Image: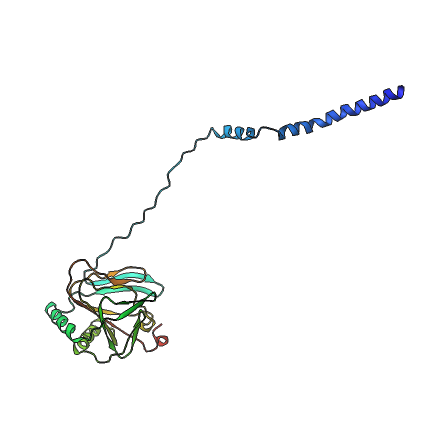
Length: 251
């Protein structure tokens, strides 16, 4: 009997100790079984003291730059590129008005004008203008090759000499463009063919009706757009230097 009482006391002592040790586990178990939204409720209550103000994002409006009209004599910087600065020198009235009208009529009749077929994105189209080429070397642009034509018209040869004397540059070729009316045009282009050299110089002389000649700072830099108002014929003569071998040009 005494032994049974002693074993009962030992078991009771172990049981009491077990209950004391088990309390933390019970508390941990109770924490793990908290209500799912209890913790977030406390955080929301803590953040509710702060005020948040929603602001509409600012819209950045980028407008096109105001166009600048160049109509007075002078030298103008148009754009800056890795190869240098592009400049335009405007010389109004280079040819007397009455003489310009006479030249326009004569060149419209004498120059062998031709409408050529262009290629853009593998689609052929008729160029909306007439062209002609003078020079001992061929000239290729926009996948169109102008064959050599060393037989300069006397009027064109005289104009070439006058322009060379005025500019201090020499030229060996000439691309002629005839805009018959307001529907004729030339799209954006750069005149950057390898045969023209690294920094080509082009002298452009216009006769006839006034047309808009647009330029922009990024390539391609210029064009003559179609117009909605009636326009008479206009001839544009672009004197340039073509090199026989692009590798030997001034690069």
